[in-house]
Length: 236
Image (cartoon, rainbow, N blue to C red; front, side, top):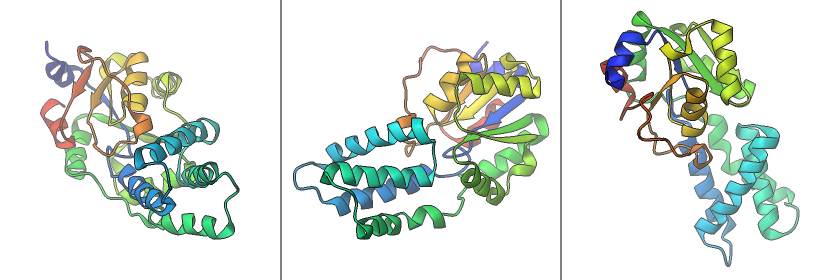
């Protein structure tokens, strides 16, 4: 039996990631990073080297402080201070805030085909939503997306790891072997869901945050790889 056939016969619970699966998110952060690195105009480091410094800082801050715009701005300020080997001035902090206005003003932009596909999937299956990040920031997106009526429940968590998925199974009382986690992040959506006994649907997004990348086993029969969100309708 192929993965697609198994999905059609067994899938009863579909769990959706939000950022960069239901709507665009990281592309806005990437635009701010591009502007930030151009503004830094470092005399010796090229863009790749500057980005490596920022990635290291973001990785540490994600562990210590979580996710979201506030943590991102903190990382930008720390990156500037590390590179210039001094505290950021008030003017520099204001400039970072100005660069990041797009994060605050960004409207939720659904990925192509999301609204139409959820209309159909919600008729045939039980849908849940699982997103990680800052509680208030993620709730604002959920309230603005216009999709919540499709989901039995929507959960905002600090991290999406194996224990989070095991908690979700207990919370809603479903059989993990008949459930599918759908998302764009190998690190947060696919690998921990598989480790918790769920199946997974990987829908790549070229703008996925670099810190969410990880290696997937191409031979794993429990992972369905799709090119677009609309393709879910062919399998579920």
